[in-house]
Length: 127
Image 1 (tube, rainbow, N blue to C red):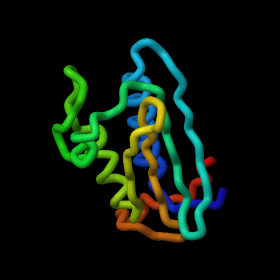
Image 2 (tube, rainbow, N blue to C red):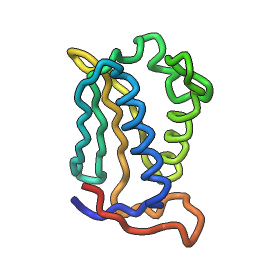
Image 3 (cartoon, one colour):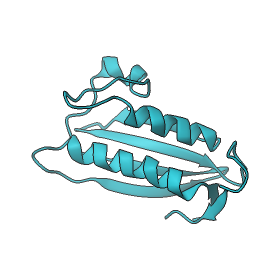
Image 4 (cartoon, rainbow, N blue to C red):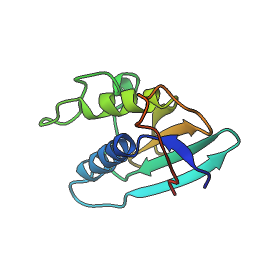
């Protein structure tokens, strides 16, 4: 995997949030897959679960603040993840899996300096 310029603490927050959401979506257990792939101009990180999934009518709003499908959720985690990825010049997307569960994809551009405050930018190799 090529190096991607990111704030490592913020990107850790994004991936941790996606992984915890995936685990919480599977109260009876299941598998969470995390993978990375290189695209011509970007690196794509994915978190896939075997949970209940997000209803199709909620997919368009899932990154909006205070939107949640959990009774005890705040609806802020995905909104914060969206903001962090956007600040890095990237894109985050959610899609329903063909069988069950969801896949969240974080696309980060290669060689981008993003819109991060000076001094927070570090090169990290995410694999």
